Image (cartoon, rainbow, N blue to C red; front, side, top):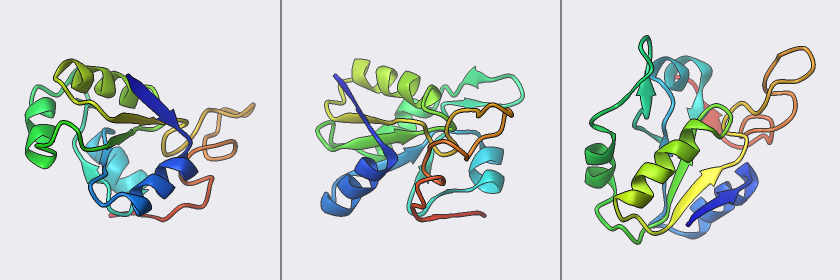
Length: 130
């Protein structure tokens, strides 16, 4: 079963559980230029320009987190790609999967802007740009 946590709940879990790993599943451009949570490991689920699933995703996660019982937190822009990535990891046998609701930038507001309603950055959690 995939658990959904708010960004603040996810941040708290990461602080409390040393075995928890945060995986940023966004594209390389998003991770580098939009920013990312401090300590997040970048393993894209899909990559531009074709938006095809990264065939190395599962192997890269297995290298990073060999223990299928360890908490794996997944983050994307708004919480959709991370949910798809979590579903793939669940099929592969991972048991503690956490989708971070609203992702890094959150949903679009009435003006079609992000970072104004929810998400990791909106919550003021630690992040950086490359």
